Length: 169
Image (cartoon, rainbow, N blue to C red; front, side, top):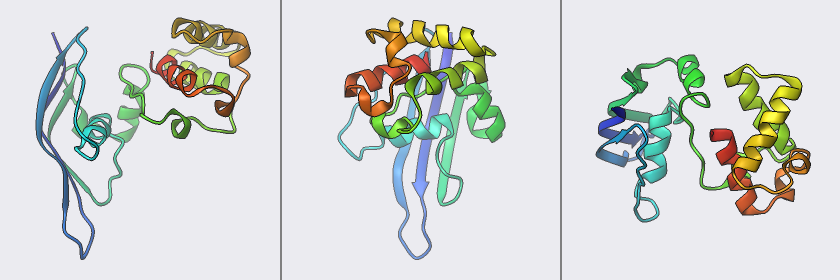
């Protein structure tokens, strides 16, 4: 069963008085349920922009996105922002390359993980904290109860990356 279908995806950045920048041009691929796909290419080849376009995370102004992106039969490029927000974190997620810039530096890891659980899994209070600790343990973060209270700068780069994976799970 096809879970994600990307056909002829293109992303162009536009600015008045400047030439358009074609960051993604005609990318197509499918991902079946349970399948893993890696996007590989040199720096600046459009891997991140492709992912951001699929997730609906590019700015609306100055960006033209074309082609078709279907997730579980739904056209992602046609969904409203609130509909996309409901999907992100519940049914699809993106783990960004730089975990330190993806995490809020003044908010403990536990709060950031539990926010996702409260928003998308209707958990609250102690249930959300227990599930957050379970997820940190699942991705291999030692002493998850202690780590929930720590801030991103107190974790190694690998642990920050795993905390993002826990949020995505």
